Length: 431
Image (cartoon, rainbow, N blue to C red; front, side, top):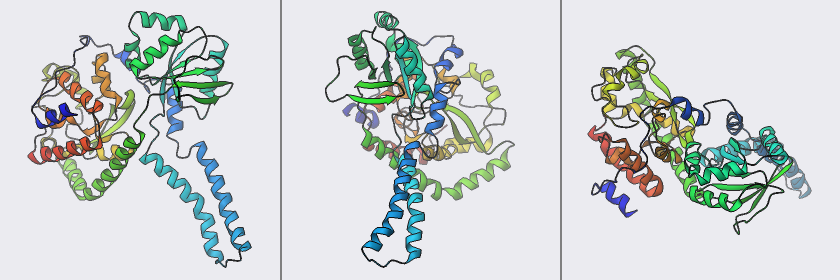
């Protein structure tokens, strides 16, 4: 934390990350294939279920709430307590509705950070076939199997030292063991190194870590969790609560300014007022990012044409005097007003107020494997890089700052970055 304080105060600058250089010729088809959501498959099914308004557990709670609502008047009658019938009827009707709303609000404020988990399945045979089929057909399983390999193949990956690269490129959260022809100790060692959970499908058993065993039934298989990576659930819930509260207040307070900016954009140039584009967020998941349009309507089509004038290194793309930027767009960018609609992304849960900036998919294709570490956290409107090295053209330095933020994250650090961001906006240091 001390080094982070020095970075914020400007006394030191972190060295760029030392790792293998990114390839000069990007391979879009390779990395695009590794991003969840880029192709149809189990991930899409899991995510659509996760985004549903009411989950299966909610119906059980609603049933219990409705039963209690009908039971309550009976208890009052037995106790000879006189309550108006209109009040009882209102309680019966409102109780299930308020229960559903409160559970929905709780998921918005404190979403399940273990949802939509990317899983590497290790194993073969009948058990593996049944377990994978049951996970696919299950309405409650949130696992997305990104790849299935045999036990010997896993051993070859470890021996060649490429498992770390595989885990990073596929944003793995968990290793699922589906047969007995595996080296459990090797898997545990790799899991500890890459901070992955390990789950075993019965009848396979092995050496577990005391106090960290959990059992989950999925169809015909019982999944035994023998290692769980701990998450700061309370701190993450507090961060989400702060995001929801501040983004809601800001959207309401800034509504007149937002309407005025929208009117000026409509008058200044042709095209939509709000620019919507795909960005890559936590664990490589794509989402629609909202900004005020600051460029001409055909700006995206001209990006590749202008890429040779790029003034940044690595996966960045930035031109000081970008010919695509409109007159009002220059003013909006200078004071970062074009990013105000991203408060809606924060409210939705796609982004946070503070975190690594989300990049478009075509920039992600130019990432090296070590750059993917910045996708281990929810992206933000502002971050450590924006308030300490925004004008620095080095992509490696921005990644180093993002990783430093993720390692040392705290609510206090977020508040410090937000305070520094306010100063940068007032000074008009955007571009």
